[in-house]
Amino acid sequence: MDSKTPEGEAPAKAQKSERIALNVLALCFVLALLGRGLSDSFTVFLKPISESFGWDRAQVVSVYSLTWLAGGLMAPVIGRLFDRFGPRTVYSLGLFLIGGAFLVASWAQTLWQLQLSIGLCVGIGVAFVGNVPNSILLGRWFGPRLPTAMAFVYSAMGAGVLVLLPASQLLIDHVGWRGAYQLFGIVTLGLLLPLSLLPWRLFASGAPDIARKANAEFIDGDWTLSSAMRHHAFWALFSTFFFTAVGMYAISAQIVAYLIDAGFPPLEAATAWGFSGIALLFGMLGVTQFDAIIGRRPSVLLSYAISIIGIGLLFLLQYYPSYWLLIAFVVTFGSMIGSRGPLITATAMRIFRGERVGTIFGTISVGSGLGSALGAWAGGLIHDWTHSYNPVMAFALVAVVLGLIPFLVVPALRR
Image 1 (cartoon, rainbow, N blue to C red):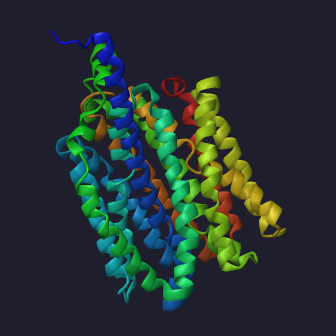
Image 2 (image 1 turned 180 degrees about the vertical axis):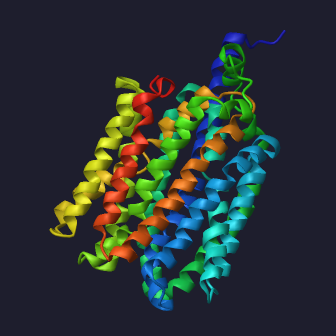
Image 3 (image 1 turned 180 degrees about the horizontal axis):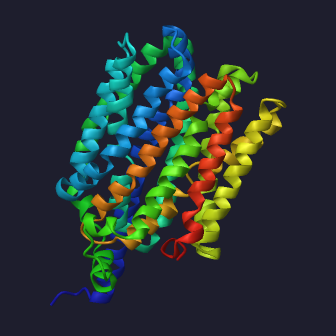
């Protein structure tokens, strides 16, 4: 007879499952940091690329817009691929696309070449290592703790900005923007080998207790994409993603350029916005904790209110370019730029749970990609038309207000 009792085996299994879950969380954090940091580094490359080719702001920002458009449109496909082939294939394709695209971009001579490489290929690659696959994988290990896990992974966006924006500026200063892109490509492709050696079958299996609980408790888990799209919550979440992204990226795509135009040196501007990564970490965890204490709706609305305050502070910076005002802007706007993501993701995963949740959540995430692309492009276009940042900020403010409305009027989003 086995000397081990079921009571003795249970804690050991639970500890093993917890260790694997933490390893999966760390992996998702690193991939999100790399993907988001590399894509957002374009805000530092905007000015040197524009000056190198003599392009106007809208032309250069179109590259950044395509990054988000491509990633958003690919989200349903990524969800479907994840459901069918698993995380190894999805993440490997992502790193390959990102690394190869940066190498190609380092030799670009025309706008369309940058749009194809940095715009389309990096956008698709970042989506392959981003929120859609990470949400699905973490949902298998964290279950009801998914909002906290996603808050940690979403904070990788801030960590990526904190590390890679100042690093990008330093590389540009020493080896130029082409040399920086070459280095990004080589390093990213070099990560493919260690990624392929990870125990993917174990990572993809999920925690047994969560799977059992899902089978026992999850009702209405037979959602299809068609049935989800007929539900009002689907379009409420889609519009929240869309309008929020429009507002935030109309501003964030040009923040470094705006700070430089306001009188801050380029490295200081890049570093200051890079420190939004630290603010974002605390913002993510703070909003998630508020969710547990005061509920989903008040927490989300609070995050929108702080974002609106941040836009107001950014408006004042052009007239009063002080470091104290800059810090206040970074703390408010920077801490909230993605703080709603974990809560909105958890809401979508709760409502549309089931075997096809990857495809459904991926389709909802199209809203974020479309909004990011439209916001960045429209912000650049408005700046070119008016030669001022004030209409850009007004446009962003209206979009942010539209983004919060579903949480005011849709019952399914308030629970």
